[in-house]
Length: 112
Image (tube, helix red, strand yellow):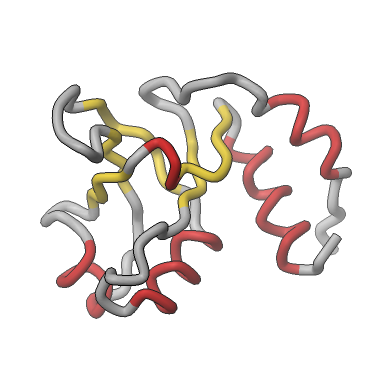
């Protein structure tokens, strides 16, 4: 059985102001105008992406790479190679360690 670590420990690690390229991230959707908003938000809140690069331009400069994106979401909300452009406000949590974000997802899943 997988044991959950405390949320406080995770929170201490992710207090930085900005994610760095290579960090793991959890995102959400700010705009309800997104296609399949509910499904997209559920996917983003329960899956960890990797901050791939910052294009430095535009409204959504953060490029996040995801794996195993459902075809329905990929065709409508992601760029060709499972990339999604996001704004800083759409990044809910980030950390250098993927395990820290897995703890956060598990805690939310069980309302801890």
